[in-house]
Image 1 (cartoon, helix red, strand yellow):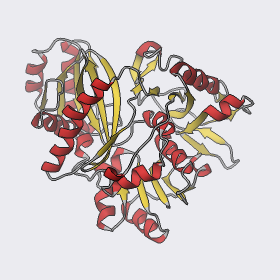
Image 2 (cartoon, helix red, strand yellow):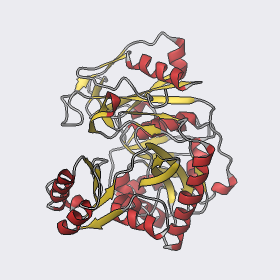
Image 3 (tube, helix red, strand yellow):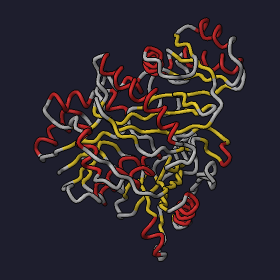
Image 4 (tube, helix red, strand yellow):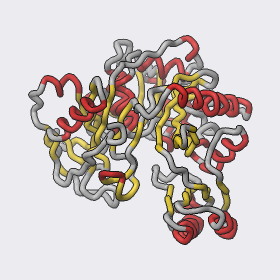
Length: 422
């Protein structure tokens, strides 16, 4: 099976690593890929749907896997399927679950999926009225795609009103913020839960926990994610049962009833409050860096999972996971998340520990390959050091041992990933 992976980050690199373990996979392609994905397959410099579809037809690509949200929202799945190509991901209509926070919140309300009380509006007056009914902190969200950065947790009513005004004026997030969601703040612990769906059936992956803040102890600004671990012991069978019955099943049935059956990854942002799972948001693709921890846990062939989901055949699959724990630590560039940093060479020590060679690896993200053949840190989040172990503590130790083997000027990372579980 020849497979094309669309995207350029650590998420796509990790999917590529999982597919490389799969004996049924032939040629791997990445569009556009990054400076290290050329070690897993072939990078192709294409982005428009027409050219990509032509490439798939010409090169016998059996399956396309879409990593990031933007092409999904723009309708790449609809385009490929109209050309008779097999592609993993939701239609543009179904991708509104991430493309519009207003659509998503109203969908949850229509189908009685538990979520925080909210108002959606393009009126500053309506936003102010609702803010006055809430106690701080207060959450203000831009409606559209903002690269994971369109959420403000305001620590006072005045701060919430200011955030609302800046979004609605277009100053904060441009057109993505000209309609907003204001909602109550939920106090609990957050989980990332992923369901692979085929429109009817689904497979739930082990629950993960992401670390959004830049600094230790969850301080500093929000980022795209500074690390994650899976599975988390903060989830028990009862929470999984409630997610199945109250969230995933009504969502899939609701999407089907509204004429947009959901295929692909349903990424459920969950806040557990007094043992009750409340939905913060939906995304329609793997989280990054959660994907980097989930792929090593997949014991079954990755190609089978993605292909059967894309072709509506998950009922005929038995997916197994390793009984292990995985911790991933993001290494970011000096000025992340404030601005881009000067490219700098990445030096990785020769790894002499057999334990590290067998139970740890790097998922590359914001890297490019220079004319000298060396890897350079060029992105905000440069790479993820991933450790696998029989316990969270062992996986964490291996991840941080690997961190110590990686060097580039200005590198930064948290030193407490998985602290909640430990």
